[in-house]
Image (cartoon, rainbow, N blue to C red):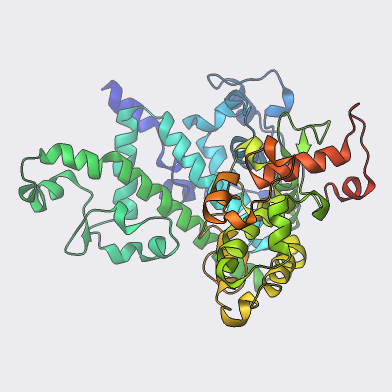
Length: 460
């Protein structure tokens, strides 16, 4: 009886904002103009959340807009800040936040849709943050709660027989890999009884129940729920955007919220122990070729036929993109995407690609003269998939490759390795670059100097 009562307390809208219950919450909310009004019930819910840190007034949302922005702030800080404080956002993991959270979700989605559209950085972060929040919330539930809510949500998302073609959109967008799923004659097996009946007899000398837990179990079910709701979020953004294009004027409340969202995403990324900024905040830096290591300077002068491809695609592209946009990646050890620091991709289009193309042109023979397809591989190494043009809608289809280490350069491209005295103190060409630009900016007393680098700091 106790477990049943606990399970009933977890509304499916806590995980799935597209549930019937969530839509009912939205219908009952009322006037959109009230989202800026102080909400006593919301404040009470937050300050009485277990483990919540209420010592800082700034960490407590006072209205629905505050909550919506805290939702995104949670994701950005959790991803980027190595000293992320869980206690400042503990209320986001508590089920009694659900009715406020659903309204906040729809406000965020509609704001990024009408202002930025489906292929924007803001929309991408909205989808990613929803996925991470669902994942974190599922992790906080009791096992009995998790099993029951997983069963309930799956029954609404995937009623009846589940064919793999129902996941074609998720597979094509790489949210789910076909290898994650167990198939039998084209149908995806999720239920234990179906697994035992259809596949159990094929497992020789193995316990079918244990194999079900290993291959499917709760993990795959939760993955499917997470990715399907992320896909629904993407689809809803597109739907709202298309509808907004037919309207004369978007709601000014949503436009104002959209501007606040951009402010959160544009806050300089925080890093710790970085000597280049007394505030601890590091932004993208204008490239300084004088600080390039010897190996990079060699490639910039052009390569001979034998080593052209690897030098330009695998070596130079990651180096220049990280040196320009995220030089401190190895100190921070935090994954970002290009658009996190170059939202409109102007630095990529106007600075990084021209430098790469120039180096490719100086090769013997020019790289793109006989292998124009290598431009696609350059785009892929910066995280934009195998496409001829760099576009935000393709970002994330591949990973943004980090520069290879000095050891790998020596092993795979030994002709590039012509070390100077600085090389002896580092293990990666990017680390060389960071050390050199820091030396240019600071003398032994810690005072800043070097006009060219100083003026470039923070430029996007």
